[in-house]
Length: 260
Image (spheres, rainbow, N blue to C red):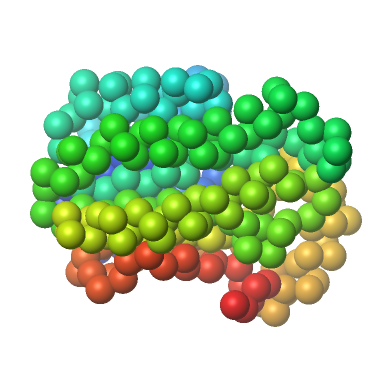
């Protein structure tokens, strides 16, 4: 599968949230290609999973894939998902906190309490709750790692209407660094991948074709990214053999769109 080292994550269990499509689906396929057992959170339901995830998973790897559903935009979603995961496995070597969305473009000053709760519950509360609930399992193995998905907008500020989402991703970026310091004595590395403008359903929903064309023209590599462009960054940060001396880092994957 995609030329990955088929033994890199052999006998390792990887949890990936937001895995039904887009970046999350590509990350699941990549870990399966490296021999991992993957517990994949496929969103609120399985309506998109058959076409975007399962169609990419070879039959021989499906026995190593467990699919779960949970609404992480609900206040207890993270804790509920953790219970489902721990009901199915007592081992977690890698946690990929990928689930998140903007929920629509909301003009400054028009935010409602419902907007605020929805965006922060999904992008912050569920991430913190799920991670906290899985920490005992992560601490019980040697060389565990956490990889969070943030966003270029968490650093650049994003475009109009994305203030809540951008702020939430900035929170996760800072939280990643603090958690890396706190968990280092336990041997757990914590890093994040920060995708730029990646052509997934996210941008099909929230960005016009004109905006995307203009963005692509301004990127040094002259194209938007793909989910498969992002997946290797997660493998790299999760693998002690590749990044064992890296923690608290935000890895930018954006074609040169942002050069910090």
